[in-house]
Amino acid sequence: MLVIKREYLTRVRKRSFIIATILTPLAIGLFFVAAGFIMAYEGDEPRHIAIIDSARLLGKDSLNLEPGKGLTFERVDGTPEEIEKNDRFDAVLELPPMKKLDTSSYQVNYYSSEGILGLGVMQTIEGKIAKELYQYKINAFGYNRDTLASLKTKVKIKRETTDDSAPPPVTAESSYTATGIGFFMGIIMYFAVFLYGMMVMRSVMEEKVNRIVEVMVSSLKPFQLMMGKIIGVGLVGLTQVAIWGILIPVILVSVQLIFGIDAAEVQQGNPMAGNAAEMDQTVENVNRIMEELSSQNWLLIVPLFIIYFLGGYLMYSSLFAAVGSAMSDDMGESQSLTLPITIPVLIAFYIMFAVVQNPDSSLATWSSMVPFFSPIVMPARLAFQPAWWEIVLSLVILIASVIFFVWLSGRIYRVGILMYGKKVTLKELWKWIFYTG
Image 1 (cartoon, helix red, strand yellow):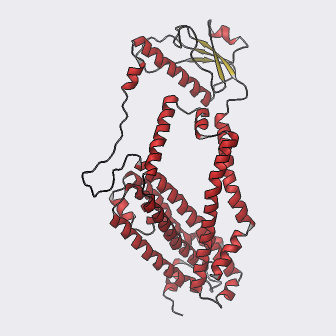
Image 2: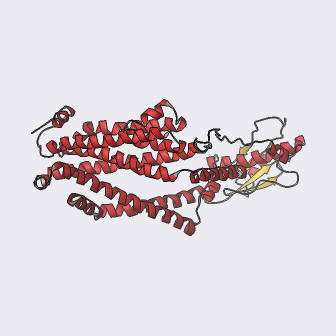
Image 3: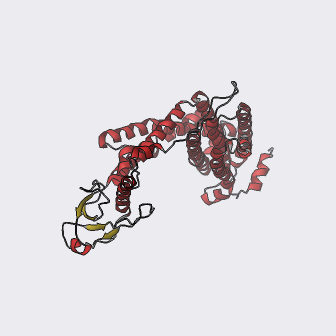
């Protein structure tokens, strides 16, 4: 408890910890503010564009193109050469007559002495003209727009079952939910391994190099010292994540209230965004996903999430502590020793991508049992409701593996923490496990 208290209080009182904890949510808020203004940016000056539409493809009496993205349009008559000389216009668009109504491609000629159009402006103009040509073809063929819209049928897959004891039906949005949960768990595990695991390793190295550990092991066992460091640093990480969990939503809501920037406005300002129908479809998809999220068994998912997180952190951080005890002040020496620890995490990420596509495959089932992979792979499967025996077996293997690797790391730690002036290899670490002195 003394080691845990020391590790925790020493780190949370550091100026670097306080700055990083506060600046990270502020940086995220600043990112959304910058992204909102950038996506809504319409140029320094509005562009007035002349439209030559002799065939009246864009409306018989008036031009139907609405202003947008810093653009205004005006229908004119004449040749491109004559109109381009008019200083009122920044560019000229010529719409040639459409020879065939069933054509799927149409070319608009652009004239300007100011250079080529930017990608965002070009896509905005192309989208507006394509929308008007679509309406022009409907009218030319004599079709009814509402009738054509009714021909589109949205298909939603929902699994049903005839077994009353089976889990409740799962909708297609479960794949999105599982992907989100899996990615979230993967990111948390990434930070837990590469940030807090490395923090444990550096802490062990510093005390070994400074010879502080020689004083400490005179009052407590090496295993107690190692576990105190692991738990203390883990509490530091949980404290930081908890603070971020409060500050980030508050800052994002404040950004929306102060600057009026939200997801809808950013997408409307985005030149790559679609039309209103696509926006409605996006909103509908989001609503369906939110319904799926609310229907998940969070009373099962959240506790399992915590158990897998703690299990993965304890297992990996103990291995990092063992590596730190075997190293000197040469950081280059750590690369060969930490590589076998970091590779399983990267492999688990790749497996996770395959698992969310096929959550009931053999790869998903067996990788959920491997303790190095299960903290990332199994949470990605929870939304797909895997069999209860797979979850129980995975947890039993993970807990047993945590106990084993903590014990294994303790065997290495007790020897390496007091050994100086010797370059350690993986073969040497193996010998320390069986050292009885």
